[in-house]
Image (cartoon, rainbow, N blue to C red):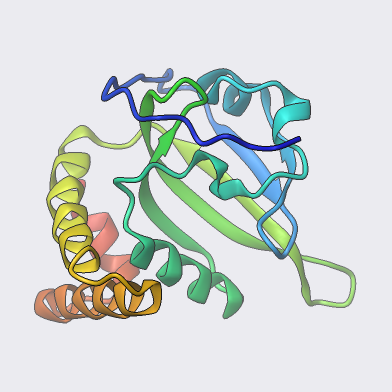
Length: 176
């Protein structure tokens, strides 16, 4: 099945505070499991997402540098919390506070990734939008994708350095 990326509508949708969006991927980021909350909010049928890259729900307002940071953390076999804006099949968007962890096999090595996403704090999303807008602006100064990623990652690390906090500590201050 060929995936066609939707055009953003600019309309934000929400899910219930009690709901948890759950998905699992293999080591390459291809979806191996999606719960009903994921399917409902994203507007897909299970057969449309299984085997597809998780990036199929990536919103264009989500900086690539944040995903690079997330992947680097996961590949170091560590968990990560991150605010993420995703895009539904119809182009609507929704914000989540994602908790992504490696899934370890019997050998003790990662065999995939597990993500739980909850309703994020609205104030934190407002602060994150400003940070992400700056990261996107930096990334868009370049045409080469590697340069975009390097520039956005550099600004993200500079932003963290300016706070005097590690990333995981910084994420939790956003909701304060």
